[in-house]
Image (tube, rainbow, N blue to C red; front, top):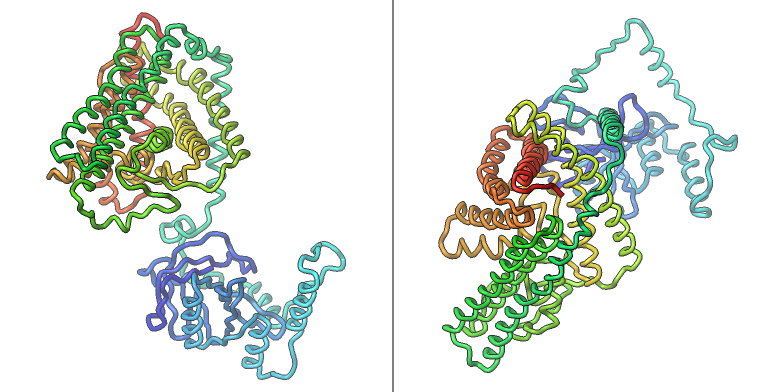
Length: 618
């Protein structure tokens, strides 16, 4: 199938997506769609692998062909060739995105000599008449197609068994085809009829089917992983879940009992905003009061962040409970900063009585947008705190209804993924890192490399499961319960060709927060683009160090410097893609640096330092 993209009638060439016939002259088409360069001139329709190639993959003479429009929306064009009076062969399909685009294609084909008809039956009759000079009666195949169409109208879905005796026999080959087949079987028949490339050459590699090689890779992957699973079971057996034992720790639950103190920060931030909104409504708020409100809100937000950190560091609790407290604390702090920052911007606009231009193009679909100070109310504030977003706005897109069955399926998936992550950590990650302590202590670099590679696969699987559980399952569950409409929590980060693409695509809530409250404010105060990017990664590095270092009570700044190291790695990955002029190698560089080497090294370093600073390892 060829999909036309802006084909110009006068130009008669362009970059199209092609789906050609299989080799061997079979009458069905492949499923692979490939972008190809197409030229239509001098009565020939030529398809090339690239524009610079001069050996066509397909060359069709359109002067003795017919064009028919098919499809439910009449956007598809079929180009037919008449072999003889009894047989009509499909050459190629053209599927346009619009009818206007289809008309341009039809007009171009007509100029080149093709005959236009409304259907395949009429095309066969017309071209047979022009080619053979016989215009008297309908051909046999035309009659059969008319009969089939009438039967289809009476019985839209008739059961057809191709192996039954009532099935219509195939059309016998014509004498011309029989002679050609006999001639091709002679000893003197040429076997090399056109210049062609090898299947695995670069000229053909991009548009040939390689499903068999992909299947081979899947089979090898399954066989390798099956061997690793059997080897692990033979070596360790079924490991007892130690994480659940420490989850039931008394000290850990005493730490989680202090969770209500997290409410102090949001209450103070909201009360300050509510008082400011009341003064704005009474026209008593002055510009000098803006700094006072922002200062006290910043103190309340910072207190809400560091008070739980102090409790975790002073409590004798396992790291799991510390993580369960610090993770929502960081999320809450980011929400409070967004709430205060957004309302400060709206308040400044309200007291200055100046309309900000450009906001008309930022309309929110399926949302009721409130104006300041009407948005400062308890219901709006609580909805934002519970919503799966970090950026506050006065109205959010909403979904139409709640889907209970969908929720039950997502909850079941979440429980399964949690069990799978627990199994992977207990069965593969913990034994591997525990056996790596001596290797790290003796600084055996070959052994360290072997440990990193062995740890890379289970760490990758745990990380992928965590991503799916958090960003796809949990956030979608919360969004469904709150009927939150915008559920693009991630994009296609797995296709990232540079590390810059990955950080923009994999966690869109944090990315939007950093853009809105760190990157753009830095640009507005006069910082350069590179300095603003460095500030965004600096804040991200602080958050990562808090989330990892505080529960473990280990501050070696591995996560901090690991995030800051992303800045030069982004420049390297961009330069690599630009130098090699291919995004595929950039994607491989991303997977190697981030998932295969980066995460296992970080896990080994933190586990090693945790053992050095604690007498026992939970």
